[in-house]
Amino acid sequence: MIARYIKAILITGGIIMLLVGLQFIAPQQLLHIQNLVVSDSAGLLFARHWGLLVACLGGLTVYSAYHPPLRAPVIIAVTIEKICLVGVLLASMDDPALKPMLPVIALDGLFIVLFLLYLSGKRNAAE
Image (cartoon, rainbow, N blue to C red; front, side, top):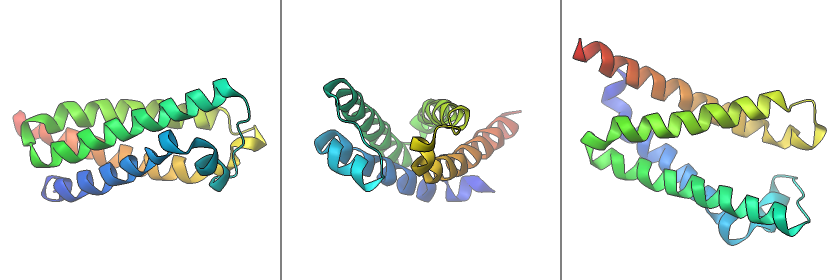
């Protein structure tokens, strides 16, 4: 069922991830919008790197929407990244500085569910 909508899901999710790539260009400004503060150069380096990583995954996600043979491997990679991020954030929720990350948990959680449903449907179709 979800396979019917996977192209739109991949494009939507990929564009959202591509927008996170703006953090590579302007990390302090984007972190400020999220009420997050990183003042040291090492923290900004990691914020930029994370923005670049997410943008690359977003680009691959959009690309896989138009290239079906790549969908499963890209979705697996993106899902692993999202599961790890959500896990780390949930484990750190006692830190008040990370409260602005709740929307990230919700949105990435939604994409985790959608991607796992898609992958489980592909597995069942292959059996």
